[in-house]
Length: 288
Image (cartoon, rainbow, N blue to C red; front, side, top):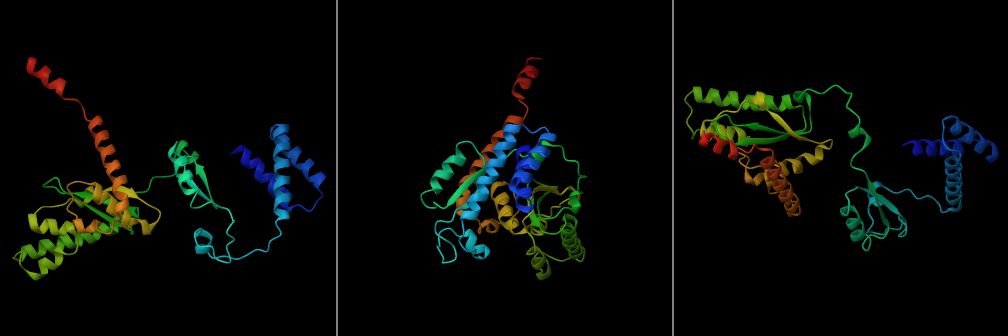
């Protein structure tokens, strides 16, 4: 971070000032020395900035305006995108795996340069000083509701606040209880239509079970609303004993199968490891 602060300071001063080069370097050196930067480091950063400036000046090719899709595409060499143009993309740094992925992509995408980024960022190391948001006020989430009468659970998603989605479930449940109070049978069209709204209300109608909406749990969240459907399908696929329909995961690509299987196996092992070992306790109790 300190290196980047000095580097960005040098680049801004160099690009924005109208003074001559000698005074610029002297001013930069003095300011950084006052902030206890080593002289050798300052000279190296200044020299690196000069080399970068000379390289930029030597590239006198006219600028070409490209749209977003053209800048991302590396396979289709359109006239506006030079075939030898370097494109940089970032990947999380995972030992061995990141290097292997970079080597696999290099033959097919020679113009793409992979830059790895650390997983343990500064924001994860520093404590969170922000006030926590009430779960009912959170949006773009995947949530779960457990059945009060069996081991089944319902998984759902919402782009709105959680409390708004729970109001919808509550309205369906209220309508269900009203129909039952009026003596509606299972073959009634109104009850069948109500059961088609969500798998939660369908489970209640078929088994006469209940769900406590006050015990809703947020199991995942995302900042991209478009990613919610895939995220929901992944959780439904990896969760046992759900009332959700199996057709809810029909849109999930088979390429996710291996990753989901690995995650499910890892979570199962972690849960078993965290369970207390009661075998010794049973033997001790038997001896007594």
